[in-house]
Length: 270
Image 1 (tube, rainbow, N blue to C red):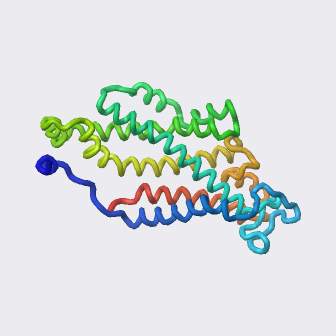
Image 2: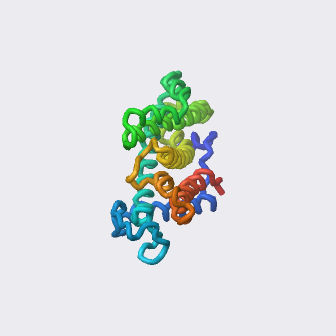
Image 3: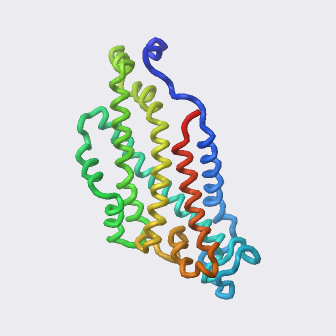
């Protein structure tokens, strides 16, 4: 076995760059806020108190209150959980079929190529809007539309990379020595495509967060009073002159979430 590995297989480089470490640390902090925040923050994100309308940061409200007197800290925590959770589920729903079908297509020429080409021919935003048109403001069509848009990238990258790996001399040598597809998949293909799939997953989550926030901001995604980050910006925009920081808080949270995922995805190995 060692002879086969010595033929041409080069294991992936070890080590994680500082950029990825910064991205991972930031993502852990934001993930903790999104997961633990709604559990420990006592305030109800939907409870209104008109006496506290646009309450400033500090005082009785740590991050202030919106125009209905709702706690912004609670709404940001629930909004982060919603955006982060929806993006994660969308990424998983896109990655699993994309990777599996990509592996299948690499072994079976032209398999599913037509279906992937048809999906790629449709602009992603149009596909999401098409699903939202049947049930605007609901999670299901938004989740389904984003997943159908993102799976193709996993499929294309997995298929192309796997096909390149299968054509290398050490794989041919493995086949000649009688090693089966399962052995080649577990020992050569998956270790090689794993880092690329992880990078694609980070990009997919960032894309989903931006898409969900943008669609909510233009009133075709999730609707108020759902505490979604994009809809929070739209709700507070008319009060920008009175409370500019209140508008910037959800925008800043979206920026940090996407930045953490981008750093995690783009950081080069040391």
